[in-house]
Amino acid sequence: MTSTSNERSKIIRTERGLTIAGTRITIYDVMDYVTAQYPARYTRNMLNLTDEQINAALSYIEANRAQVEAEYKKVLQEAEEIRQYWEERNRERLAQIRALPPKPGQEAVRAKLQAWKDRLGMSE
Image: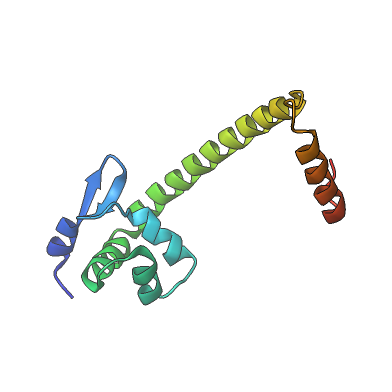
């Protein structure tokens, strides 16, 4: 293990938040795996990090647990708000698209799609 001051220089603050230096991977990405209790090796492989990078990230998280968890909670909350916004917006847009009349010449394609939906039990 390296010293804490050296590990801090491997974790930098960018406009995206706390980030592993030389990558676009944030500490919050690593926190997703930590909170799901995945092993460090799995996290390293999934995020394509080196041993040094994952060790620096995990050490930083452990040394600054309260701060990182508070920021992580905010990140999750913002992500949920964004997801809800787009889900609502897409729901409205898809309803508008469904209300549009079919384009000329697509009757056969629409009939075939509806037959598949009926067969799969996905009718509207």
